[in-house]
Each structure stands twice: as C-alpha cells, then as structure tokens.
Image (tube, rainbow, N blue to C red):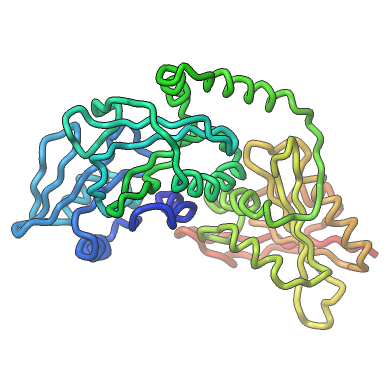
Length: 378
C-alpha cells in the first residue's frame, strides 16, 4: 500500500501525520510538532520505526534495536532511514502517552473479538512484542469502536477482512490509531492465551463459511456503499500502469463525484460475487454537445485477483444493453495501446478499431498510444 493510505483512510483518528521524502516539508512538520516518529512504509516488528528529536547541533534519532544516532544534516538522516527506497516516509507527532502501552484490537469482518495491550518491560517508547513488550488483556472503549466502525469498510472493500488495529494514547489521554495491520493471525493466538477465548475458532469458522458461499455473479447499479471498492479496483489499474492514463490517488469521494451529476443517461454498474464487489463499469456521455446526444463512452475494470472469469464481459453486456434501451446509437472506448488484452476484449463484444492516436499521452516518463474503438448499435 502507498505510504499515504493510512492517513487517507483514518486521518481523523490518527495523530498529526505527514507522508513525504522532501527535507524542507519534513523540517516544517517537525518545527510544528516537535519530536516525531518516522516509519518506513509496510515495515514490521518495529524494524522501520524511529524517533527523531531536534537539538541545537542537529538531529538525534533512536531506535529500539539500534544505538542512538546523531546527524547534523536532515537530508543525510532521511537518506539513512529510507535505505535506498524512494518511497515517502510516514511521520507522526510523538505521543507522550506511549508509556500507557500499545493496544491491539482484533477484528474479523467488522466484528471486534477482543483486545490486549503491549507494554515495554524496560519503559521504552516502543511497546511492540518484538521489542520485548509484555501482553495483558485489555478492554475496548468508545474511541476504539468508533474508529474501527469508520475505517474497516474501506479494508473490506479491498477484500481485507482480518485486521489488527493498533492504538496509542494521545496527549489528551484518548486512544488513537497508530497502525492498521492486515492479517494478524498472531493476535488471535494471543487473545486465546490471555482470555481462554475462542478467537482462533471464530476465525477458522469464518474462513470456512466464506469459502463455502456459493458463487453467484450479479451485475447491478452502484450504491454509495460500493464507492470504496470501486475506488480500490480503479487504483489497482492506476498503480499497474499502462491501463489508464490517470495517475492520482483515487478515493471514494472521486466515485461520488461520478454520480453527483444525476444524468439519467449515465450509469455506474458493479459486479458482485459472494457479497464482494469484484468489478465495475461505466456508461458516460461522450460529450455534452447536442450533436453527440446519442453517443456514449464505456469503461470496465475488474479486481486484479478476479480476472479471466468473465466478469468484465458480464458488465460490458449490461452496459451495451442499457445503452440500447435508452436510445444510444454509438459507443466509444479508448484503450491504451500497450494493453492488447483490453483491445481484444472490446473486439469480442463487437467493437472495431477506428484508429490509433500516437504518443497522445505521457505518464511516468513514458509516451503512450491510445486505440479508439467504436460500436454502432444501429
């Protein structure tokens, strides 16, 4: 996941946060918030977590597994922390409440199974078990429940149902999110050991139930609750490159904008299987000029783990049928030429190649051709 992902999903429940590799931006953030914690994205076992403090002579950095480090140059410090990666570091204001410990809350498909707290035996600001943290059973309060209820649907939309939420106390004594971990099998074992609970049995029963759900693909109009899944599937295409000429962070609010116009001749469909959104398609106006009133453009995207199952074809057939029903005469599709599978997909549904726009787009220092296809409905 991108370094900015947690802030996008849970920013209202985390300490002040910055994702950046720009020294000037980072220095301003430190000036505003004092001591900060820097994390390498997707690091585990406290390996990529550092505390940074500014002094009169430079910067002091400490890490649970390494000796204290002194630097006079922030760019040099950041270079050392990134270890050759170009990905931004995650910065957050250091919380004095870390002495209260690190609370892990275990969640399966939105159901909270329990919580335990890890506290350093040596009073270190890192309480992770890998750093010698000791675990004790803990309770779950309203702060944690509200944060989980507000964020887990985004992970569900991505197919991530088994989560471990980490909470720290902020300077006001309230629990705030520090991390959200996907997976977390060890957390179930820890709950069973501390509570004599059946957390692992619950997990295994849920996995079995999910795997036995009958596959019944359904294509239907998109709802507000589908926005996160639509955004994630499109983000996969953006991140893969060579599929769309888009290059941005795409979120639920962007999907909402698609439906905000209220044009009855535009349509956003999703394909649903086992209550999961596995693909989506769009029928939109080719142009708002009167002469193009019977022309529309189609787009189809399928979750990367669900391709080659005919899902895209099911969506495409529905889009074409809906276009015919509302009197559209001409459909257009624009496909990046380096994506021959998409060109072939449209041809299978009756589209023909009109031509190729050469070097029409440039993304990530690469020029792309775009193939224009059309389908005459009358």
